Length: 390
Length: 193
Image (tube, rainbow over the protein chains, first blue to last red):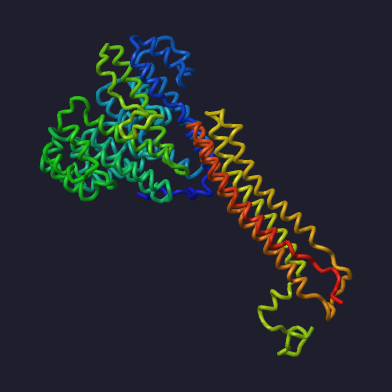
């Protein structure tokens, strides 16, 4: 697959602002709209969802919530995601190359999720309209494209037909074609029968792997500060994917010794700190103890792993990964004149939306002791900040 | 003045590349100095203004309070252009048209005086122009960071402004040296007796 090449240089310190000064400054201004420690504090003290709504009217979410009457966790999530998508579209219309392609790469992840949602949903026989309503707005295709996805069969011939007719024109087409090519190569031409056993999850992991690699190549070609910051973020993302695939494969057929070398190995991205030595070791891992031993060799992951192996009472491994991600994404805002801020903004807003949903769910289900298990964004009390008083 | 010994006899032959530079008119040098001084200063100022202006406009969309304060960065950039204008006016006033416009120079033409003035003005124009490009770009980048930092945390404004003040001082160095260089450069409008 030809990697996407930037159509123009991003510009160094003295020339970045020609094309990208305005969008970058917009994102910086939008950074003010994140909920502060005091907002989270007030919300966790609330007893009903109406109080939460009252607190949110003073924040940046006030306008967005003005139309809705009753607040529920799912309605809050919908409103917040719509707000994020509106802001993203605004930024996207102000962007020119190469920033435009960069922002498109951010949306491909959601497109892959939507395609997988439609395929999986059609297997379980759910209604197409319901599925489309559940799709993430950042990754929408044309209506006709989306309606036609569930009509394909879920076997090898169906997938290649799906690709030929529908997906080839979409930006995620190249990833799907690489997946089909690799499957057919691997199976030695016997595509038809063997692919029936391949689950949707494996397809999704493969597509995400190709997306991460493609994005990484693009960012490296951009060079400069963007390659430094965004490259690090993508490497960490690839490692998280590899560890999660390994962890989730325990107890499934993917963990069989025969399948490990052939199938699980193919799901690890070819970028990241764990590549190539770490992923080679991960291929042979068969249970959590061995995984722990492999991760001991990588200091940045051993501390996260220890959270999981110590029983996961207060935090699960996902929470530990979220915390580490928030720390790195906040760092992206510390440097100027690079594209990483756009990616960081989307991901941190998503974290904030997750926090809001968690808080409202806890209030709704009256489980106040669990309510503080969220990771606030740009918090002054974050464990990685120095404890000087402000 | 026959200080140039003629190795060749013809009218159009010359001694070498050195003659190219020494045969350019001192008026040419002086006026190019004025042009470089003004032009390069304005390039620096313009570069700085679009660097800082784009960030200022973008950040002010969501944080309108930064609008008026951060115009100081634009004013600092503008100051570098003003240094260029000041230098250009000073130099332009020193260029005096010759008494008698003749094609051939007399034997007693004041080569030393004219060329001293010409070279002096050219180099002072370059001093001002090149330092102002550097100063303008530097103030622009610092101003862009100042606007963005102010949008996120208002207490940062004054601190980053100090960085800009130092960057702006570079332009002042240029104009000081330029004035000293061109101080004693005067075109002798009368030929030496």
